[in-house]
Image 1 (tube, rainbow, N blue to C red):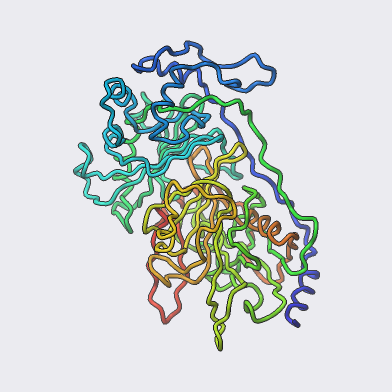
Image 2: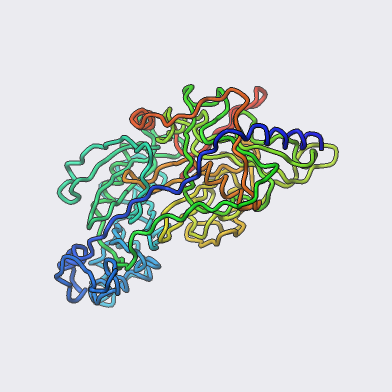
Length: 544
């Protein structure tokens, strides 16, 4: 009790700094040129008449592009032909580009010889592991074994290589922006005018604009001349991605009446908690920053999520330096009074373009504080349930540690990643690609898996990625989690002044971050610093 009273007093004493306001993300919106997209279907046989207009509008006052859904028989037939293979394809408000031989399928359907399997139409890629269309655009993932494909069979890489594509009406404008210009791709310029190639956060990326919509095609790779930890080299990935790009065809979508919608305002309770406090974003622990650089000051609440742990109390902080356990021993000292600490950009070798050093921790560590204590010990026997922070669709292959939750709504296009849950349990529970989950649904338990059981401490790694003009980019999830936790406990926290030395927060240089990101050694994930008595734990990358 005494410790709780002291902590409450410190909260009141230290919470005197002027707290900056949480803010919603800065969004921009593309305008799909559906007239041009439909005109591009003119040479596709078996689709019927194609509208000749360059732009599709209605005379309705305030109507958006395609408001009222004018008659478009060619597009309607295309969606109908593809719907069984790509569920919900007509809900995409952007033209859906996929590595799919649409003309061959339509020809086979007309002849009554269409293959129920999509394999013969996918240019050597496996049937869609993941396809999700919604009001903000669409995302899809495909995998390929190079040995099975003419022109790629000489590549000495035996594992499937996954390629992702996204087309988004919604883009997140980051501050500072990622300073990666990318390089031109002359061999693809004729088919994709303005296409750029870059390596950012261990993803080889191609970005281009077609029909007024920004698209990004990407593949995880290791940029050091040799494959590592199950990833292909970026040179190998480049050949596969170019094969993917050359196979792209328009496969569906439909104009939407939606106009640009502002992001939802940040929701915070009116009551103030006497036990929950948090240090400002970017105020990482002293000595914990990558390359002696600071954290990332970012007060943005990127999404109005449900907190990812089922129950309070919970703590956020550094697992690397043991700062993720709050100020009390869980279940022993009462009441629980605790403060949170940002550890985005904490010392890691993983590339993070938004971190001042260009490398760092790609998300936030979270620990459940309420757990059962084994008799005669201080060891927790129960580590808490993990829930879906929003309604969306899962991207995850069997046996893999990383679970992605994609969200696609009129207000946002965003994805969340969970790490360190047991892959065996996730497999048994069916937490696999294509599964639709609801906000608050239990999807797993806090674990300690990192390449192996007991590979890290018991905690949840949670991170956020958003689509930008350069593809999906890691952003600081800290204030998003603070706001979510406030809603969970029904009271807002106190922003604390910091009585100890910390690495000062700074925005960092976008160019420095970008160049460091391209040179950094490893991809998305994390590991703890081993004790002297332990062997360093190998870490499994977060690829699906």
